[in-house]
Length: 230
Image 1 (cartoon, rainbow, N blue to C red):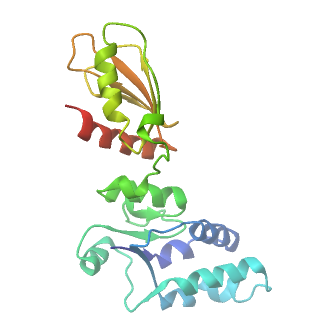
Image 2 (tube, rainbow, N blue to C red):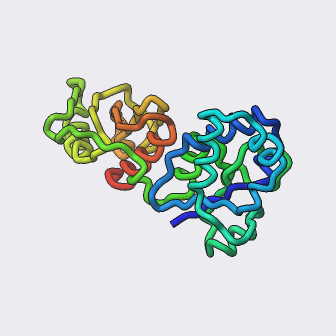
């Protein structure tokens, strides 16, 4: 379980257009079932709410903002500092929801202002990242393997036969050799370069994974390294 707290000061430090734009970015966040998003009722006393939102003409957009605020879990105490969050949660795994954290002493890694920063938080603080990753529907035997005909083909095939069993690996092919580490390169398009770094010629593979961006692909590379770098 991890908790996130709506930071009143961060949503008050903007104009109404910025407020609406920022709230809709928070609405787009699809939180994990184990995460709770909290608010303190003092949010309804903020000037941006009282003098702007309450006075605005009825619109579907404004109704969405009301709905978002209402569905946040109520909290009896105001938490706007990291030490307060630490005490409340009993751990460092928490974050703050907001719009503009400029000048507010909250660590960048704990500022959640949109889907991307929420995803960054998850990949930073969650240890078991498998729950955050897509898995392929391909069976191991159906995964494509293309290996060049050279002296290292046998070793690469043995590695491919193991990598096939990973639900995060889609296909594999040989590539230029060389490298001192198992993971030579991680790309934001889902590809990873893996090296048989313990062999004399350091044969390498170009591995397609289910990663959709750098965060996911990097997490997959760590999983593959931990399991298959032997």
